[in-house]
Image (cartoon, rainbow, N blue to C red; front, top):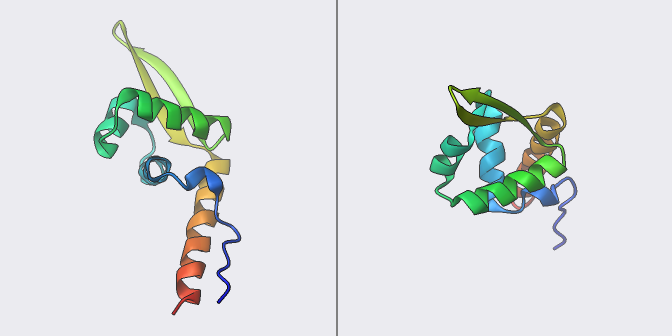
Length: 99
C-alpha cells in the first residue's frame, strides 16, 4: 500500500515545532517564557526551534520592554498559518486514506 505524504511540511516534523505552531495558531501572541512552560523545554531548545521557524518565515517576533526588562513575543505569520493549515489537512487526508 502506498502512503501519500504530499503537503506535509518538513519544518513541522519536530514535536516541539508542531507544539509551537499549535500554540501560536490559537493564541494571538505568546512570550518566550509562556511557550517554554507550555512545551516543557529548555531555553536553548526552544530558541533553536524558534529560530528555524523564523527562518522559514512561519513565525514573527515582536520585541519590547516591560519597564527595563526585555520582552519577546511571537506570533504566527500569514504564511505560517497557511503552511500549518496545509500540514494539518495533509495529515487528516493521510489518516482518512488509511481507513
